[in-house]
Figure 1 (cartoon, rainbow over the protein chains, first blue to last red):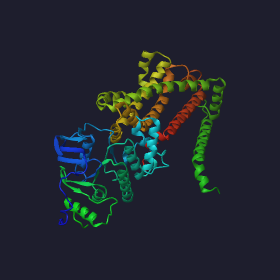
Figure 2: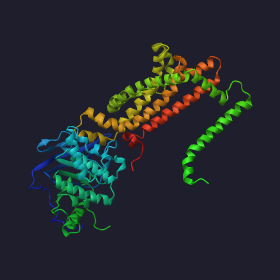
Figure 3: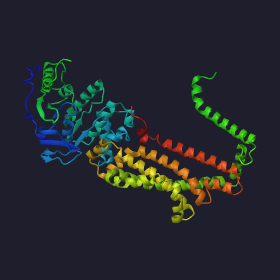
Figure 4: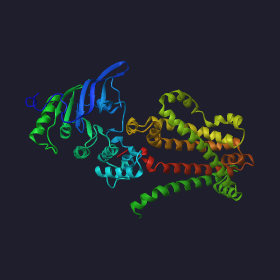
Length: 268
Length: 260
């Protein structure tokens, strides 16, 4: 470890004081049992997410960060502990909090329009069409309204899924390694697009990734998780304003601090 | 010399036609050289077909057979799809019913003939029952498996957007399993067409299957037997091609090709 300069970059479990709390996870434990073997996945996870915050959950593959995200989204029940949103306990999935899967989550039997309008079935037709047009525009898919997902690239499918989530005007987005299946160039473009959308719409975003650079580029705070059973190892505040200069001293300092936290060498 | 492009376009048409012509010739000379007085030549079959058209029987029989298949297959689909979707949706119910389905399914629909005569007597209902039995199980099993193979992600997304269970079934599960259901329908239609011939041999006095057995029984008219066989084959081919067209519809096409 070469973690001499990381002390200032890494703060402990402090919540951002400026924002009101949107989501609070307290004492979350999760165990899976299969064939009589009980595997602890999450151990005493406590986390507060501020309103409008962009938070990254960072950890190695299989550490349980996706499980935590699924619990916060209401898809999974914790073995112990509670999740509250706006002070109310989460009891299941809710259209106010949309989960974005990798691009495989788009419905292949619907067009781009059909996918984006999927959650808008309660709205009158005119409003539905207005929103579809708005979000087609926002994710840059004009001209592809009638296209089917199989005619689109991976990055475009991911845009459709983000637009489908945004169209129902949720308070929160949960993104589970959304760009993991994309090539590295498309991934960079999609990060920029997501930041642009987040700045325009000011949703609370919880973003799971195993990519340190991605976490530091995107988020207000990076929650570094340990290996299984996952606990919160540390929370790093990324105090660089957007747009972020990826070669600035502060960016490199924060990034290297997280490398140290995870115990990775800086050389390959 | 013809260009390569023209050749690649014509070959898939011309070669099968040549093959068919060669078979016809072999048939013709086979009959001629063997001096068979039972097996008809292609010309005799063609004359027999013309006779059926003249008597107005051909179109009537084709229509009768298609009507029976249509009704039996329609009943099979309108029961098989909703029951299959339900059994796939409630895995516990599926597990209870599955052993029975798997046991009844391999029984040839022909084996139901005696029971169908007891239950429905001789006539259209009996024939339609047999076709129904042939079509129902492939459709049921395809629908059930179709639901089971829907990725959990689609179901979760449906829940996330606030759909109730009925909406999830109609807006997510049904369209997601539609490609598999269409394959089941195509297989079922093929089997139904096989079975209509057998059903018409015992239960009714019209249709292409009846024509086969009647031509043999009343005067050993093997020209008509073979004419009927050829028409049965041709219609089977057309039905299958029609269904394959259905598989290219945009709403289900995604299920038949790997995503790029």
